Amino acid sequence: MWLPRLPTDRLKRLAKNAPDTDAPLVMAGRANNALFVHALNRSAQRLGLYRGQPLANARAMIQNLAVVPADERADLALLENIADWCDRFTPLVATDPPDGIFLDITGVAHLFGGEVQMLKHVTEKIAAQGFAMQAAIAGTSLAARALARFANRSIAKPGDDRALIAPLPIAALDCGEDRLRALKRAGLKTIAQVAERGRAELTARLGAHFLTRLYVMLGAEEKPLTPRRPLPDLRAEQRFAEPIVTQEVIAKSLHTLAASLCEILEREGQGLRQLEASFFRADGKVERIAVKTGQPLRNPDVMLRLLNQKLDALADPLDPGFGFDLIRLEACLAEKTQAAETSFDTEENARWQIRFLLDRLSARFGEQRVQRFVAQDTHIPEAQSVTLPAQERDFTGVWTRKRHTNDPPLRPLRLLDRPEEIHGVLASVPDGPPARFRWRQAQFDVARAEGPERIALEWWNENPRERLMPNRMQLKKIKLGIAPKPLSPSRDYFRIETRQGLRFWLYRDGQYQKNGLASRWYMHGLFA
Image (cartoon, rainbow, N blue to C red; front, side, top):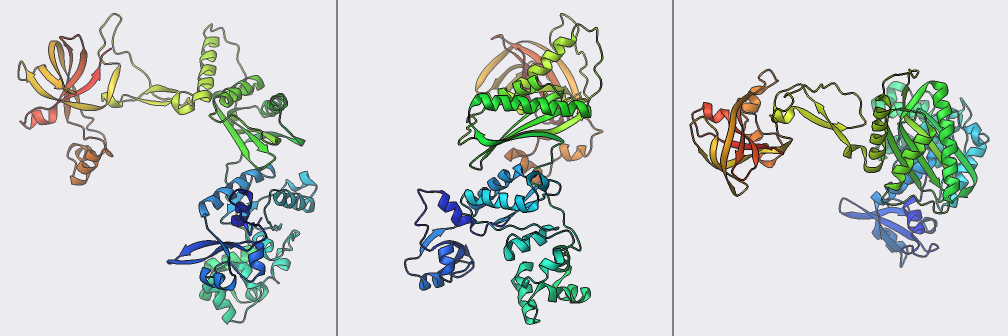
């Protein structure tokens, strides 16, 4: 698909900013500190203007020419939206910026009555939305691209790509101005004349990339497309002859699709882990809602409940606009499930309820906001646990019991993001806990203390010296906060209680103690 006037068509759709559609209109771009014609409408093209023309020449040719600054970001966003809309025809959609879209319709054309009917259907749908479009069907992406631009609505039968491409002008190669100039100097006017030249000659003069592009265009080689979105494992969809608007009909359609998708999953012996619902509006806008599950799922009622949780949590409610003409449910990620085993564990139902609660909370607040702590195999306090989405199941860490019943806590429930240095430390004994210190502009007197508990650096880790003795660049990164602080060889931790009743977890930096310098103290955690 080629949208030759995408920028000006975008302005047409913005009624409040669109000038007279019959008047000549150009969009100005800038390159090398000079303005040029980036895009133009049909009226300006009929008067002899062309893309790439200096803007001063265009204004000299036409008086009172309407000029609008080009907005390439808006054009690219519109192209992406059109590509989203094209997902209704095939899941293999790729963009060809700045004004092209590829659709791989292998195996789907019969759903629309054949290639001829599908080409007509797509062209009419795009034209109804106010876009000028040219399209063609061929065996390779580059062949279809060339035919769309120079032989609109052509359909190449299998093996006939070369016959349709050969008579096209060399401009269809789209190989750059330098190579086109070289081909013109050689007297070559059509692609057939270029293909008649020897492989070695073309490679020597124009490069191996040009030769590969030529053979792909002629159908001798293939260049696979890179789809914009990953292909779903399974999907179910429902098309409507008339767009639907009411919530009752939408809910009923979702339930029907969920039941159909679960039947497919049951037949395949799979359960979905990630579900996506796509709502295609009649005006071309596409709404997508995705939810994840912590375990394989193929229950339609649970699917709908999770989707409803996600829909209720949307900042902008789902707006049907002029109605949805297609609704699709996709199992973006599915995995094999084992046959259910009868369990006599009375806690099994409670565990299932907890997993379902995690799915509902993740659907409402987002999976990154519902997390759990996972144990790590290390004794460094700040690295003993990490937080991961609670729906993830591949956890390898195992929590070990640190204390017995009725024992006081040995570790604080809350650790600071980064240990904070404390000042004004007054120690009662040289190697003992502080008797007084200042932290966050507050003075604290110590009433009770317990320790020390020495924690040494993991010397077996990679590059421990680099973490102990950072260079100048690493010190600069540490000051800017984009690199972790170097770990000391050892830390002496103390559990203290102040006269105000607060309980802190402090440590003395062992590196400075070892070098005979004044010790530095840090606040690392707070007890409940």
